[in-house]
Length: 321
Image (cartoon, rainbow, N blue to C red; front, side, top):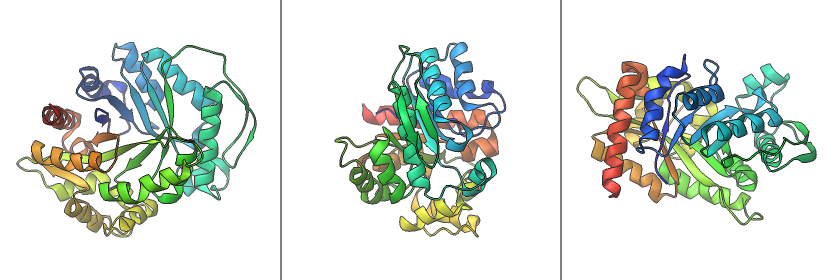
């Protein structure tokens, strides 16, 4: 598949996403991805772009399950498929225990099981309706009025083997973040296959990768700290990285950032060097490599981040010719 492109932050206004959407519309990237946003809401931002004529394949990587019922999630995702006329990946994540407690009163006892149940409900509603669905994440019955629309895939955020097995059983797409290529190949893909054993098909893998081009005045350690610091302070991300052989401790995000750069998980270098590193993800079995230029966006702004993305995507296209 063509590489994807992530708009790297929660947009204050949809206009800031336009340059990233145009890179997809112009064919350099295959899909525009956005994460959860509590600023300009993700689905509405994509709808806004469609209203401006930027009708591109889109992906949510990921929005958070406790914020919406599966019926609403299915309706929102399907609406984007109608408005854009292009395929949509509706990706969901279980959120942190703290956020789940704030929204539901208690965290999920088994987040992977809850995520699988939620994804199964969304898929069932999209496919025509469900009856009597009950899981830790939701209770759901009924369906939506039939509509013709572009395909909607249901995705789940995946970091560790338990969630990968859960995603393998129900999801169309496994969306991973900061997962080294060897870890995807040796740990996550086998777990996805294990979970999918009774389905006959394994979810495809879409992996978000931090990237930045080397340039005068840029420090990759600073870019990694700024771009990945929040995740490097989260126990589930650092546990995944340690399993992958990258020393990361949530108590020391600064050291974790240095470890990301040293391991090449934060991909920094010339366009050719970045492309070579990204090729390792494809060779590991990743179907869609998603570029994340948040380090540059956070230090130099969205114009510089989009320029980095354009150069890397162009280099990837040239390398594939």
